[in-house]
Image (cartoon, rainbow, N blue to C red; front, side, top):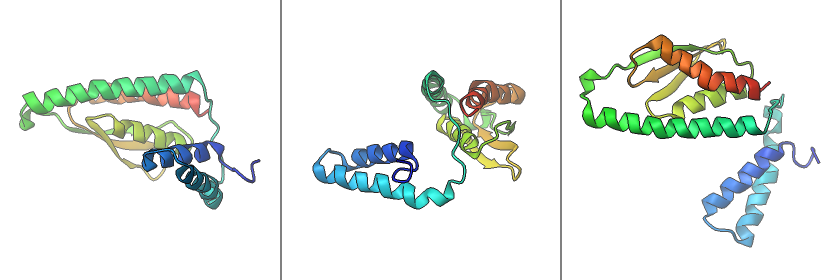
Length: 162
């Protein structure tokens, strides 16, 4: 089974995304999506030398719930900032977030999570993968913001990618 589908999760995700892009479920779209879902992971297999070890379960559901909640709250906060505060009153900052994650996949999820949350954007990863450069729209305490990112996201990702 591994030879036919080296990354079954990726195959399932590709099929789902294809069907969403096709905007309908027909025999043709399912067939073409299945071809993509089988061929693309096989073709890209040499670029995946080590498969990440994931703990799938309640931890992932909790992480997704926290990220969705943070996105909702951040949207409201950013809307307030944009609508009711002058640009010169914003306290934009570049934050250097030390990264304790080991796998590239975990670091990518952390950077993506930060970028998904309105008001923050992860812009660069150091060459040694030990720190992430993050731009924040309005920060009063840089150390507290870095600690929040590490405790809220990175600590959970360390447990999930263990």
